[in-house]
Length: 566
Image (tube, rainbow, N blue to C red; front, side, top):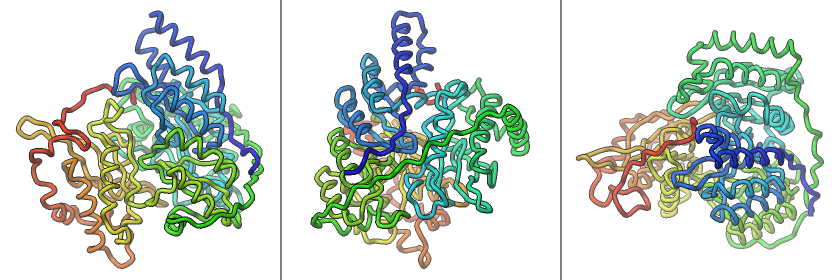
């Protein structure tokens, strides 16, 4: 068994004490509902579509967890939530249907394991995300994870961190492929080395939602030791120039749009000089943890091992070790699976695991000789699903299941697409490489803008009746060029989308150029060709198709107020 891994502690019991004090003041009528809502959001307590219950969002910076954290999440899932957690595209774990009266107890259990909900929602510096292979990828020029942790510690509980005009998102990528999608963030860092010196390419003012924008390159290279000053200057810029009157136009990308690129750079330069003069924002890097992977464990190969190994195992830059991916269907993991996974991390790896931005899990530092044994252990927990990083591995936001803003049940569509693809030949061209992402509304929590095939929930009215639809976005993605956003092609009735996905994969198979990948094909294919291929799937909705996926009755538009811009 490995030694206990280095899992940073980010929680503080004083945060929970303050939450309890504010909640009691609210219940006595001393704090109004708007003021309390703004406060509780900065503590990770978010309203749901359903009344009298909340979602608690738990931060896992860089996605890093160990057995104590998994056990704590499992306990809260069982005692305050509904028996499972939902991994998000920002490496958080969301626990739904928590009563307000039980939220503090949930926070205290999480705090025992060092987990915090502080600034997980609201107008704050959100969870800092990173590629799950920052410490193990052979393409990364150096281990980026200490810089990610240092940035988290610098901005967590920062004087401006929870009083911003709107949310502020940061990401770290270890190499030029930009696996962490730095180019769609308010502040993104991509590791690079220049003249032997470690540093980062710096992106600023990117974002998705209803106005997707690829971030500008603020610095082609900045030395690693200046990272804190860059971040402080950009945060001040947002605080000073962000729109506090219209929350829907308040993200940093709108500051760029208002000032123009030259004005944005000038404002940044002045604030950077201000920070330099104050000699602030010096990052404190943690000591590099000593990795203690478990010794090899012998085991027999059980049924399914070879396809699982081909799909789910990646080599590390550390010789003899591999990273093992776990596919979570729609990002869900049960409390029993969380409890069972903790001992597996210690028996086969170094005790750590990483949540990924595509809603899966990576277990690093597995001795390659242990792969048959860890496969059997994961299979016993239902955590050896095939289809990882294929068209079946759909990314989705929670959608209308819990979200007030959602138009459609995006999770049900994700499941329906996976089920439909189970009936297809998994060896067909495009099946293994096509990225599918779904959001229940245009706001892109499921990141539909940056998928080969992206879908966002919508509605159409015909004859005075509303029908659930999905807008198809074609050919989005993020790579070394930056972000590109899928072209809006056509709306498809919700119940026909799984069949539409099959048609689009077949279109790729028939029309692609030699050795052309799906990302390239869907970026270039003529929308008219796509519309023609979809054919009758675009015909008017008929009886029986007027309900959303998973619903028996007709469709009704929900008009609840979301808290994303509260």
